[in-house]
Image 1 (spheres, one colour):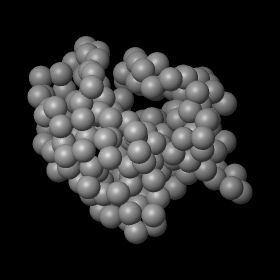
Image 2 (spheres, one colour; image 1 turned 90 degrees about the horizontal axis):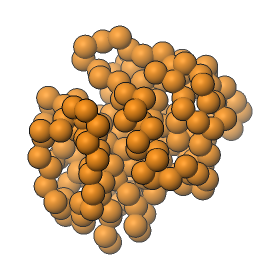
Image 3 (tube, helix red, strand yellow; image 1 turned 90 degrees about the vertical axis):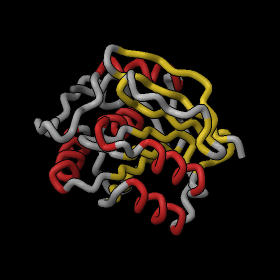
Length: 187
C-alpha cells in the first residue's frame, strides 16, 4: 500500500495487518482518483471508515484543502497518525482532523462544527451492512455541499439502492471483487 500521486508519491503506508480491517487496494484507489479527477485543490474530503487513512492521505497528497478521517478503532487511529507522519503531513497547520468515532457519530460532530464536504469516501466493513444507515445519515447530515460526490466501496455482489434520500446514484465501476458506486448530492 502506497501513496500513488502528489506530494507524498511513492511513500509506503503502514497497514493494520488485521482481518477485521480490509485496506483499499492500490488499483481501487487509483481508479477512484482517476474517476474524480487528478487535481483536488480546494476541496474538502471526508474519509468515513478511514482504516489506515490511505484514501484521505492520497487526497491530501493530491492537494485537497482539508481532510477529515472518521475511525472508531484505536489501532487504526494509531496507524492513521503513523501514516500522516510518514508522509510529512503533521506540521504546524495540518489540513486534516481525526475523529475517533463511528461514521454516524462523526456526521453529528461535523454538523455541530458546521463543516461541509465536496467529496466523501465511504468504505465500511463489507459484512457489517452499514451502507443504508450511513448513506441515509450522510444525506440528512447537512455536511454535504451542493453537488457533492459520495463514493462507496463495496463487495461487487452487494446491491445498493439507486437513491438514498438526496443522494442519487449515477455510475459504478467494478474492480475485481470490489465495486465503486458514485452518488451525487442533489439539494
